[in-house]
Length: 111
Length: 113
Image (cartoon, rainbow over all chains, first blue to last red):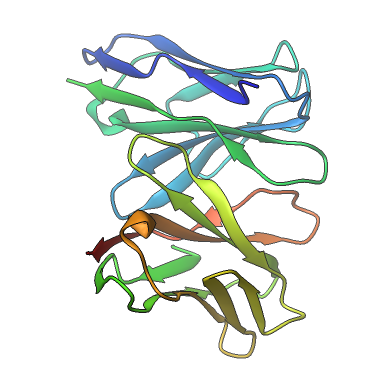
C-alpha cells in the first residue's frame, strides 16, 4: 500500500531553471494539496485541488503552477526557480471526509 | 499574519517527564484542531485531534487540552520517551473547509534518555 508518493526526493536547481514535482496517491482521494515547509514557519499551503480537473490557490501560490489531469496525480511546477523557493515540499491527500495523509517530501535547493 | 502561533520552537525533556506544547489561534471560525507528528525525513502524520465542544481529549500518553474562551490549545505528552523525539505541529481548520489546515510553526522535541 504505497499511499502518497512524491518524486523526486531531492533536487538541486539553478536560478531560472524549471521543474515539475509529481505527487501520486493510490487511495482514490478527492482532495490533494501541495505544502512547503520552512524552518519556524510550519507548513504553508501553495495550491490545492478538490477533484480531477480542478485547482485553486492557497496561501503562497506565487511562482508555482499546478495541474490535476488525473485523479491520482497532482503536479507542482516551478517555471523559473528562485532561491526563495528552496524548501521542503509536501504533497497530501484525503477523501471527502477523512484524515490527511502526507507524502515523505521533496527537498529542493535553488542556487 | 500567522493565524496559529505555536510555542516553544524547541523543547528538551528528560525521559519520563511531561512535554507541553502550546498553540493559540485568532480565527473563531476554526472548529477542528489536530496535532501532527513528524520524524526526520518523513511527512507529518496525524497524532490526535479535538473539536471545540470538548475541553480535553486523551489518547494513550497524548492529551489535548482546549480552552475556547482563551483561543488556546495544548498538547501534553506524559511519560515522554526518546521515541517521542520529533517535530510537532498544531493546526486548525474551519467548518466546511474540508481538511484545509492552517499550521503552527512547529516544535522540535528532544527527549533525553
